[in-house]
Length: 153
Image 1 (cartoon, rainbow, N blue to C red):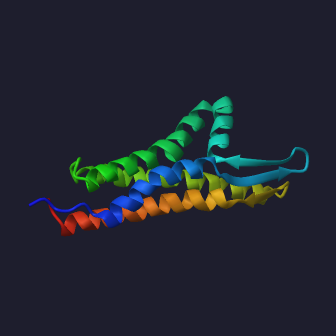
Image 2: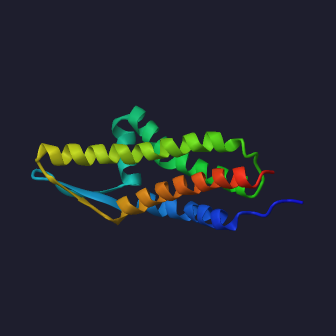
């Protein structure tokens, strides 16, 4: 007998496929310097700027912010629908950790910018949306690992 799909995990996980792109384009913060005025930054606009200025950092952050969380979400969906082996969960756990790294980088920028005291940083709803997506993904991954231990193939 085939085990049922864990809909309580699968549906929220599939919703992340929509929530992540919304969070990527949502305003994260507005940074204001006395000389330049204020500019609002999203994940996508920040990455666009980095691609023009620092290819190495742009590549890393694009992987952390876009590819790692999206690949993890797709991988979890494959496990939920039994289209991939539960052994994939080990790799997905690592992707989840990498996806959290970009939030750490954004936090470092905010701390550094505020610490210099030259300007202000105002957080917007996109910061919370993106952080919520990553934390939801971590929780869904954790609960999926527990589900796999309780409901073996």
